[in-house]
Image (tube, rainbow, N blue to C red; front, side, top):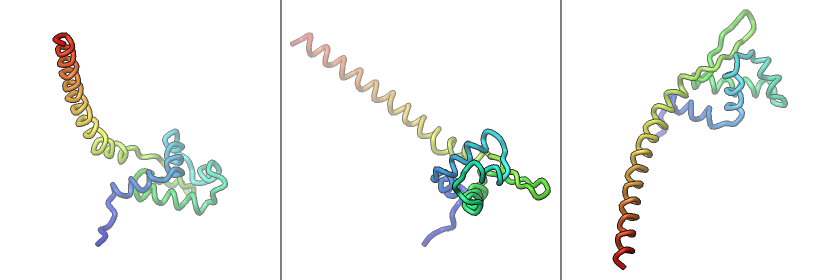
Length: 120
């Protein structure tokens, strides 16, 4: 049975597409109107750009602000920060710990080899 997609699932889905990542890169530099994004991502049509933006908005990676009839798209880095904290930072700490242990094992093994070579 499929459960509804969580916000985290939506973030991963949004980040899984190269065009959406490129759009986020553009929006990280400065907010852009939808028309500006359409111009930057030719040959995509406006409908395709809007579909990508809809995925980014659903994942809360883009926040929309309206000024009259103009839609401004703003990058929201907070969901990515949360994913980094949850997925990357925790694994980085475990990886560092594992590498320190491995270093210790290798150093002990090298010391044993040197002692064996001196005896031999």
